[in-house]
Each structure stands twice: as C-alpha cells, then as structure tokens.
Amino acid sequence: MAESTQEMRVSLPGMSMQARSLDIPTSKHPNKMPFSGVLTKIDEPSDAAPEGSKGKRVMLTMEAARQALDSLLGMGVNYNPEGHNPQEKIGVIMGSEIVGNEIHVNGFIYAADFPEVAIELKANKDKLGFSFEARDLMTTDVNADPVPICECIFTGAAILLKEKAAYKTTSLSAKAAEQEGIISMPLDKDVEKKFDEIAASVAAAVKPLADAIAAQAEQLKKLEDEKVEAANHLAKVEQHASELEKAADHMDAAGIGGDPDRGHVKVLRDMAGDLRANAAQGRLPAVFNRFYAAAEKVDVDGKVKEAVAKTSAEFTAKIDEVKAAAEKSEKDLKDKLASAETVIADFTKKAEATAADAVKPERKTVDTSSMTLMAKAGLAVPAEGKMDINKINEALKGMTIDQRFQVKASLHQAGLID
Image (cartoon, rainbow, N blue to C red; front, side):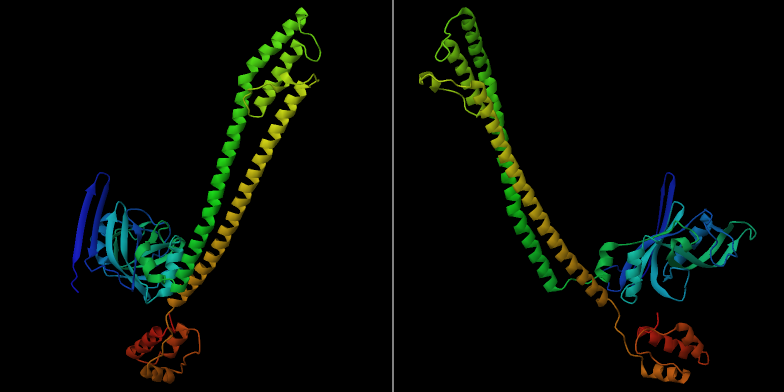
C-alpha cells in the first residue's frame, strides 16, 4: 500500500491553519471507526498540571506546535478514562492540523479489535477529551508556572475524561455514518418484516381515523354555516317585522283594526312574529298561513322564543355529538399509536441487544506453546471471565521478554486480558 504525507497551509484574517495527513486509502473498512477532536491548546496555559510536570501547568508554544505537528502522524491513541495508558493502543492518528490556537487530530479506532471500547467511546463521547503524549521536551524556564514548551516530539495521544485532562476544553467526536456501520449490526430479516407490518398496520389504522376526523370537521363547519344562515335570515326579516309592528302601533293609536282576535293590529303583530319564528329555524318566510285560519289567540313572542330555543338546542346537541365522536376517534388513534410504539420499542431493544452481543469477541483458545509456558509459570486459564494482568506479570517475571510477550499476546487474542 502506497503511503505519502500531505501538507496544507491556509492563512485567513485573524486565523491560521496548518495541516498534515497520511495519504492512505480511506474506503470503508470493518476495523476502522473514524474519530476527530481537539488534542490541545496552543499559547494557552493548561487548566491543570499534566502527568510528569511535577505539579506545574504547561503551555505549548506555537513554534513548538508547528515543528512537532508532523510527529503526530502514525502515532497511537490509547484509552483510559482516568488517565494515560501508552501501552494499550486502540487506534492511530492519521491527520493533524493547527486551527487558530488549537491542534486538531483525526484518525481511527480499531473497532473490530476493541468492540467494547468502540461502544463506550460512542456512548460517552460528550464527556471525553484528549491529552497529548510527548518526549524530548525543551523549555526556556523550568521554574515558570506555566512551564513554556518550546520544543517537543509527540509520541501519541490519550482519550480520557475531560475532567482528567490538562486542558478541560479538548473534545472527541466520531463520524456517525461510518461508525454506525461498524459497531451496530443490521436487523434480522424477521425483525425488519415485523417493523414493516407494524408500519403498515399503523398507516391502515390512521387513515380511516384521519378521514373520520376530517369528515367530522366538515360536518361541524356545515352546522356552523347553518347557524350563521339562520342568523342571517333573522337579520334580513327583522326590519320588515319591525315595520309591521310600527304599523300596528299607529293603527292601534288611531283606533283602527282593534278586534282582539282578527283585528288588523292583531294580524300585523302575528305576521311580525311569524317572520321571526321562521327565520330562527333557518327558513326564509314565504307564506303566512294563520291569516286564513279561524280566529285563535296566538302567543307570538312565546312561539319565537320556543323556536329559537329549539333550534339552538338542536345545533348544540349536534355539535356536542360531533365533538364527542372526534375526541373518541382521537383517543382511539393515540391508543393504537401508543401500542405500536411499545411494540417497536420492544423490537428495537431486542435488536440492540442482538447487535451488542454480535460485536462481542468470541472467546478463543490459547495456543499450545503458550499454554506450556503458562503451566511452567503456574498460570491456568479460568473457565470464565478475564485474568488479572498484575498476577500474570508477577508469574512471568522469570521468563524472557519474548516468552512474556508471546503469553500476553496469546491471552489478549483469546480475549482473556484487555
């Protein structure tokens, strides 16, 4: 695989940026989980004293940052929430750049080799930050606080809790699109089919209810329109009814048509009342039938009030009925949606559990030669769980470096140590 180093410099008013990266193919890879973040600040005192600084804060100068920037490329990334752990590399830095007064880095985590770490980083990325690791540090004043770093060589980076970092404002982020493809598993076909069935069921349930609510809304509008029309009829006939009553008053005052049953005054007032009674019921009056009827006493005002009250009660009853139906439809819809959401949540939980189980590394066996060395050291493979690294180190003290490395590598590959 061909590799090369690319460098880019950009200058803008009030900001400068210098970047370097390894030119390595970036096609999707099952063991790569991309990351990026702010490694450290430049020309700014650290918030706390880093490890190895004898309790003093430090300040990386811009000149030192520029000179050491390319030393970050290809360096390992280790992870320990509580601090640095250089011997536990989980990823590699592929790019570095200076943006303003910050060093930004990017690279990838070995997600397939360290699936639990990948999941933990994803879940807690908002709480995590970076801290740089360096050698050959030079300063102009060892007694200063902060101690200025004018020269260094970066040897890697640590991902840890922000509160444990020298600079509390460093940050870690991941590229969600590729990350999801690495640490999550596709849903089982049966689960996908069930999701489709639920979605279709919800859609089928929602449509008739939505149609019913729309129809009820249309009916409400129609009733309101009818009520408005009745009010319009009342307004239209009121002028004429008032004129009839005025004429009756003038004739009564002149002593004309005063018969209490069929007199002109009585008929004019009955006509006025009939106009109002018909209009209140939504009808535009056309015929006054009582004009031809036998003499009878009619409570015109009472008839008008009765007609208005009856019409109002009918409208109110219909509106209440439609509203009640709409509320019931809405409740039914909410109940069905809640039921569907519960089913979906259950399947999602099961799918996530399946995905989490799927990414757990299989427990492998330790090779024969390593088992022989372990037996000499008095070590045995447990039936379950992992082995204590401190006990392993103690047991292997009498062996050569190659033998110790062989045993640890075999145990790590078998998932018996982190």
